[in-house]
Length: 477
Image 1 (tube, rainbow, N blue to C red):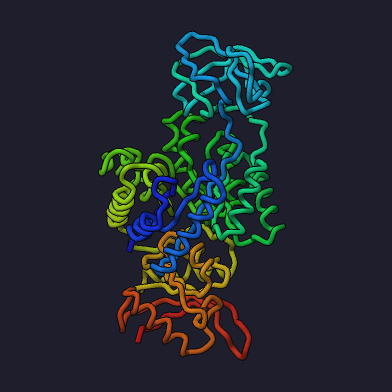
Image 2 (image 1 turned 90 degrees about the vertical axis):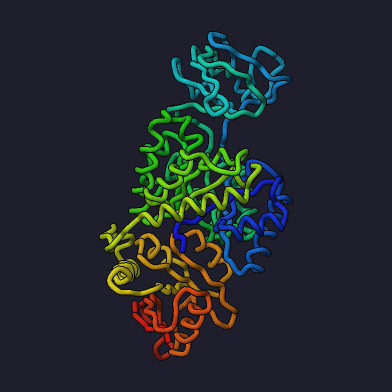
């Protein structure tokens, strides 16, 4: 059974119910919606289709909404502007300008944030400028072209190394976050996070509106986020290594090194980890990936990521289904090569009883010839802790809580089973008859056979009161 989870981004081209069903059937565990584009009506339609398909397939699917964030862009141009090496160009802090010799931008403080001699990159770094002077009063920046190209309206601008003064959480992001939370989105991807305070602010907005169940994934994509990495991770539910903007902000040769550092730190702190950007980029036009892309995906798995993500491959590419199948094939091959014979002494995640029990269950999975770990949890914390312990056998979560099943489907090595309303084991086991139902469900889903050993991590009810969690070993009858 595949342990590493897969995110597929949905876009206008492939948003029919039939196509979304095929994407999920062929291996997508999470569907991503990009809120940099599209109206609420479009996103809501996709959310409803995902939930409908998920219920029909009886396969829980998480939804990740990627918020736009304070992306700095070229403003509205009358026509494209071609620049070549050595040209002098002027950029303005105003979104529009009547002077054709001045290029408008969406960042009003651009003249304040840049310094003489600093780099200014346009269109993912394909056009490179160096700042020669800036004037805050007129909001004007004068640059010399190092690498030329054609500047188009709305193209992104990066200011490597600059401490950008825009608010990380924009008004649009707040509205988008509340819309997503109201409509059953499980994870919010927070773009251009710079400090832990950015995450704390979004968390407070969600909590104040009774959306405590919505998780925050911080996207690591600028130099400030690397400077404040540990505190950002501690306050987030997960992190995404967003290699597109990160590879523009820092030298591209450093991206693989930082990818490993981020994964190690986030895994040690018990947070969900996602690797994103151009994993199978060539498959937007080709039915097969390049060998370098296959190696990239495999190395992400070997480095310990929980999730790998596709963007344009499934959102707008020519081969969305082939891309999902290719990702599944590469991930499974990488996982087969990972021969692990003992439980790691991983960092304790919360140093409490729940963490100790998860550690014990993982240890037992390597010591016993068991087939599954059955994890029952009201909040999902036990399941998430177990996932980060990297047990040998699959973690099975059974619940009638549809939203919780969807949310946990992003977790590494977790197999979620949606149960009927009258068979809700989220809290634990209250009598021996429920053990029989658990065992029958495991066998029905071909996760184990009669006579196999299973580890059960759950609460238990005694004299009408829920007791502390326990770990037990059972023989499936």
